[in-house]
Amino acid sequence: AQSVTQPDIHITVSEGASLELRCNYSYGATPYLFWYVQSPGQGLQLLLKYFSGDTLVQGIKGFEAEFKRSQSSFNLRKPSVHWSDAAEYFCAVETYGGSQGNLIFGKGTKLSVKP
Amino acid sequence: SAVISQKPSRDICQRGTSLTIQCQVDSQVTMMFWYRQQPGQSLTLIATANQGSEATYESGFVIDKFPISRPNLTFSTLTVSNMSPEDSSIYLCSVDPGTVNYGYTFGSGTRLTVV
Image (tube, rainbow over all chains, first blue to last red; front, side, top):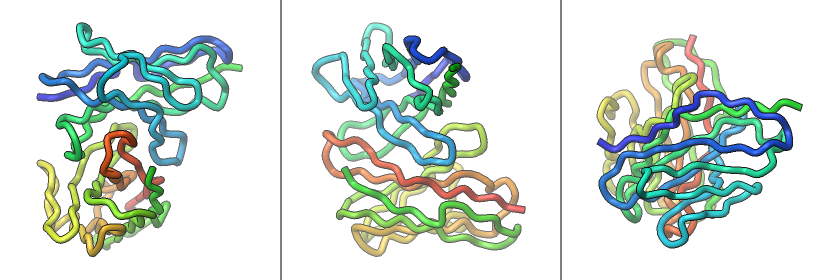
């Protein structure tokens, strides 16, 4: 069955430090991959997505992610974290191509930022 | 990308009652989705709602408990019926804007507490 694993439940980084959030997926075909961010009391905002092509994807707010098929991974990175990045981050995979809508989410990684 | 207005943003309800959550989209979309996010958990798809047809429910969710309406291409409602404290969650609607270039958009969520 398709699944998404985010191994880190909670990560704390210092402001200005680099960040990498891990995501591994299990899916037989080429996946459509997403990273979403959820601030406290808010809905989900799409950070970036991978459908095909260049495996390094640029997103909003200075985030990027790299798709590595050999490792079934789609890790999210940011070179310098800001205090406003404190939130929960969800990796998701769409299990079909096109408009099928079945997003499978990981359990999320909560990011705390130290001043 | 599509903009979703979801309401209410939060509510506290008595057990045994029902709550209807509304999602209004600023453009016509074929598919709308309803998710549940239980406290401290990830998102789980409840059902997919297409205009003009019955909603498709995921395993573990039934129409009697979560009836959905989709009267047109910009609006949907989810009702949580005969509520119990276990229904306390965040409920989110999502849309597929119809092109892979955008990714799925989410409403801001409804935080439901059942007492």
